[in-house]
Image (cartoon, rainbow, N blue to C red):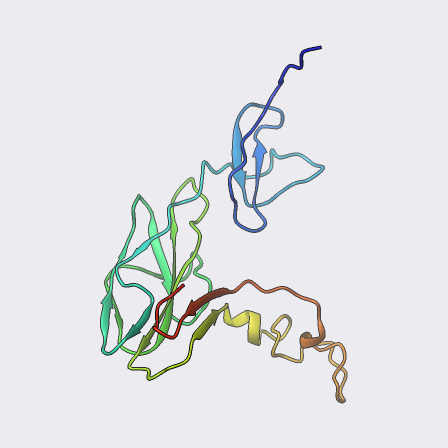
Length: 192
């Protein structure tokens, strides 16, 4: 007996906690959503057509002997927002309007926010200025709240820590996963 395909959908890579959905329920209209609704209606979710395209950095991550200017380019309509402290860019982060002076070692994280689209993936580049390092380097960047937030930061005792060593119940005893960006630079200071 021949099989008949009634419906199919090709799934593409998505960011964490996102999904695709038919909106309205059962229609042929597929959307990206940032509020998955397993077992319930999709009709309350916002329908996004795609992800915004990530920004383009004019300066490669790596080691430099002096200050540099970094230009971020947006390949489409939308606004680039960025941070220089390791935090994940949000809609309230600094909007990119002018080149960024990289005059000390820093991490620049940027993403594009575009109407009708989910925000782009975050691009993270770490810059080392006048650093005399001869060993390979791992640059691990994460939002400061992942480290220091009183309720969720892995370096904070948190509200449930017992008062005495070894501080069972503290945030650092919790089985949690935190998003981070990792860059590896080999001995030749090339990012791999």
